[in-house]
Length: 432
Image 1: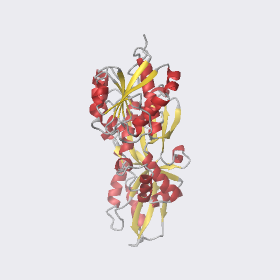
Image 2: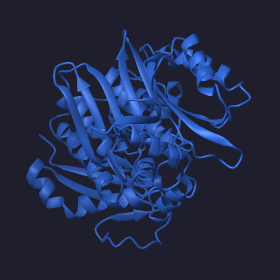
Image 3: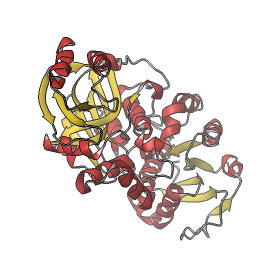
Image 4: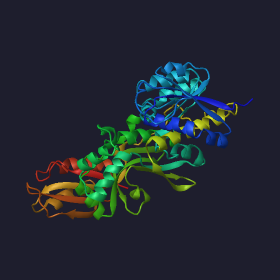
C-alpha cells in the first residue's frame, strides 16, 4: 500500500525554520489537495523557546532534544534549518545514518562538506535535498535537475548574494560610498553585523559550488573557486562604469571551456542592455544557457522566511511523493559524491578588463601604462582621465581593455605598479 501521511521533524526554529513550520501548518489542506499526501509536522527541536514567533504550535511536539526527532521511527523526513557547520553536520549525518531523509537550506555545509554527506546518504539509501540552499524561493536547483535535464549546461551567470546586490544597487542609484551603503543594509536587516561572508564573495561561492556540481554532474570543491568581494569598489568606479554603459554586480560564473570548467565569483561590469544589470536591491537572478534550450533566466527573492520556507516545502513534497510511491526514483537529482571534473586555472582564462589607477598628473603617464599593457599583448578599447585632483596631486585614470589572458594582466599590473607615479590602490574588474 502507498503511504498517505509523511511525518516531519524540524531542527531549528529560527527565521527559516519558522517559515517552514508556518507553511506546513497553514497550507496543510492546500498541500494535501495538490499532492494527495498529508504532511504532519510532528516535532520541532529548538533550544530557545522563549522567543516570540507568532505561530500556533499546539499540535506539534516541541522539545530541546534533537535526539527525540532522530530516534522517532515515525519521522521519515528531517528538516535542518539551524545553519552553520556544527552541530548541523553531526545532526544531518546521524539522521541519514538512521535512515531518515533530510531537507536543508544550509549552503555553506553542502558546499564544504557535501561530499561526506552525500556519501552517507547514498550508503544508507536515503536522500539529501537542498533546493533552498541557492536563490531562496527561486526554483533554480529543480530547474537544473528537471526543467533543463535534456541540456548540457554551457554557462551560468548568477547574482546570488542579496546583501552585495543591495549595496551595489544603492551605490548606483543613490551615489553612496560602500561604507554608507553597507550601513544602510545592516540597518534594514539585509546585512549581518559581520558581513564578511556576503561582501567578500564567500556566500556566492558556496552557492556557485552547488550549482556547478549539479550542472557538471559531479562534486565541485568549494576551495577551487576563485573568489573576490566588492569591498574595493568605490562610488567613483560605479560612476565610471555607468559612463561606459555598465552596471557593477557581484557575479558568480560557471562556463564550460575546452572540456573544463571556469568557476569564479567577482565584481563584474555588466552591459546595461543585459537582463542581469536590472536585478536590483536584495533580489537574486541566475542566467542559464543550455545547449538545446538556449538562454533562460530565473529571478526572484533570494532569502527570507517565506521564500526559503517555500523552497524547503517544495523539496519535502517532491521527496514525499516518491516515498509514497514505494520509493521509486528516490535518489533522483542528488549529487553523486565524486570529483571527476577538470577545472581551468584562472590564469588561463581570457577576459575584458576595467582598470582604475590613481597617478600623478605628469606628462607621459598614459604612454608608459599603455606601453606595458601592449608589451603583454593587452590592447585598450576605451579610456577616461579626470582632471579632478586628489589632495596629494593624484588623478584617476580608467582603461577598458579588449580580451586578454588573466596571466598576462597579472604580469602587466605587477610591472605598472612599480612606476613611482602610480598609487597602489588600483582596481581591476572583469567585464561581462
